[in-house]
Amino acid sequence: MSYSPDGQYQPPYRPEGQNPPPRPPYGQQGRPPYAPQGGRPQSPYGQQPPQGGQPYGRPQQGGRPPYGQDQYGYEAPTQQQPRFEQQQYDRYEPPYEEEPPRRKSKAKKWITAGVTVLALAGIGAGVMAYFEIPPFTDKGDSVSFGKPAGGEGGGAKQAPNSKMSMPTNPTAQFKNASTLPDGTHVAVTELDGKKSGFKGKVWVWAPKEYNDPKFAKSGFPVMIALPGGAGYPINYWMGTDLKLQSSISKWYSEGKSKPFILAMPVLNPQPDEPKAIYWDGSDIPGQPKMGTWLTDDVPDLMRENFRTVKSRDGWAFMGSSTGGFSSLKAVLKYPEKFKAAICSGPDIVPDSPLWVGHDKEKAENNPELLAKQLIDKKGAPDVYLAFQVGDNESNKKTLPDVQKFVSTYTKGPIHTSLRVIPGGQHNAKTYVPNMGEGPIEFISKVMEGPVE
Image (tube, rainbow, N blue to C red; front, side, top):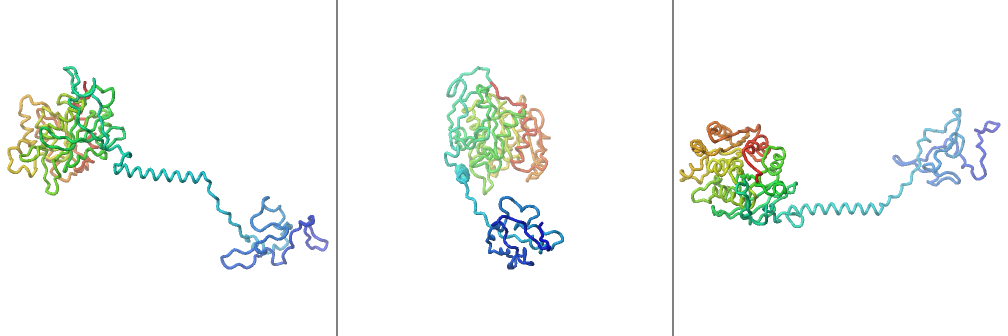
């Protein structure tokens, strides 16, 4: 620092024209003029920098002033000198100029626009697929379940001792109902039953192995899957949300199940509401012959269009609720055609109101009486019945009724298993996962396929 002989402060020498502006009078150094409460103090120069000095605001390039100097270039006072209200001076911040908004680059604009267009296109495609608007869905497309080995069309020659049956008349028109993640299809056709006289829809599904060249000359086992409830106008097993199809593929890969082809026909000829009328999967006098539809026409459709197993060893039923009853009855009534059934939460006796006045025919479709007749018949073929029932079924009689049937009729040619599902309720979402915990393996061990 520099002082004159009389002790007065002298600023350091600078070349002409580079001296800082005169220091404000004592007591006003660093004190900003009055600003309204909450406002920013104004520059003493009206926001203009002093002539020849540095502008107010942030220091220009070069950073902070040299050590020992203030912002005007004066030497900083020593500790012995008053600091001229330094605390207030330190708080002073002249206003900053706002930076102008940055303009987005053209590349970013194009990227944003492109992402927006793709998002809108994806939403639009999803909506169009939901409403089955081509080309955003393959619903309704024709589906072919492979060609018969040895040439096109049916009737290809095969060895007399072959266990498989070639498609006899592959003329059904199958339309895609849904496509699974593994590329397989659930397809639907309209079947005009030649024996029952009933016309209705049948959904079919074949596992991916069916179209594998490795199995081109193999016959596959068939499972006829029956729903509960109305069972009309759809069979709910055809929906992929219940995962029956993907579960069969999974169980087959785990060695628990045969690679079944699924046939999923409507169960009743019309809705059972509002009068709660159902047909028990039977030929009730004066009604559509739903028993013949399920046990003759549907199997004929499968033999005509798929490579199947010749013998009963490749044919089974499965169903829940009234579909479980119909499955149980079909195997017990026609053991020469069908070998096994998975019956989930089934009724045990026929109880359709349409049986009124037809006691004889009702008895001919009663599983308890059919089981007794099979046990008493010499040389009767073995049948395998896998039951599964939840311990929280809506009908509290279901579990005890099934338990009684199992304990009474598991003898002779009738083989049974029973899985009680803890907390299980009366619905398909309960039954499908639990099929893989025993029932599917129980019947698969005694069935055949794929076979040549």
